[in-house]
Image 1 (spheres, rainbow, N blue to C red):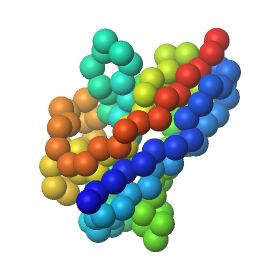
Image 2 (image 1 turned 90 degrees about the horizontal axis):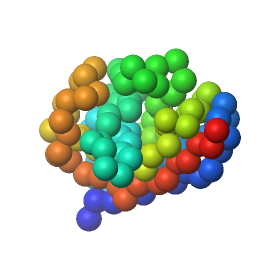
Image 3 (image 1 turned 120 degrees about the horizontal axis):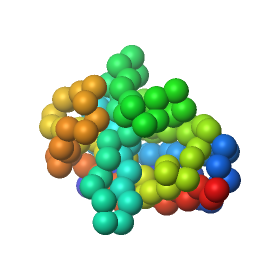
Image 4 (image 1 turned 180 degrees about the vertical axis):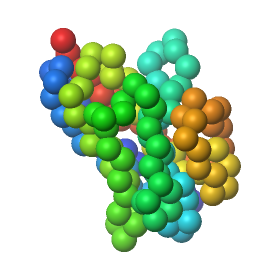
Length: 129
């Protein structure tokens, strides 16, 4: 059974930093494109960042470029999202996903609909002003 478990969310002041983690089990982790998404109640889910199998290909939404860094550690079946210079508009539930656009598919268009693969339950990030 595939499981993705996110952690690291919390409450932080604007300008602060958080690091999210997502640990996967039940799959061959280094065969999967991994990604972070976020969603605010009443709004569409938004792609934040994605990373290829070996970690060499990384793409970001324009809203987080220069502030967020995605990385992966295949030996630990874990991806990370380092979030710096946080803004109140970054407040959302953050989800990690494996192959969200289909098997082994990676894209630089983070707004592309994603409804495939495996998804975690999410971790809440709240940025206060």
